[in-house]
Amino acid sequence: MSSRLTEKIREIREAETSGRGEFSQLIGIPKKTLENIELTGRAPKGEMLEAICRQWPKYTLWLMTDQVDEAAGQISPEIERARQTLKKTGTDTESRDG
Image (cartoon, rainbow, N blue to C red):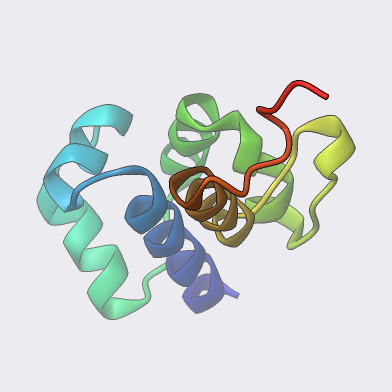
């Protein structure tokens, strides 16, 4: 389970920040701690998971249960990246007035 959690943390980091330094700063952990977790697959502490969920609440359900509920605002980084791509290409239907 811990290696899947570390993969998810990496996915959030890649979707939301420019790198480990920024991610670490935003959640209040040393960059070296994040590097160790990502590179070894070591299970993150609960405090780290809480900090990630506080910073990006939209990923909480996905991070903890591998589920999404878009109607409730609970998404995955994959969904966020797709939304950003749609906005960049001008095919985002949510931002248009109908």
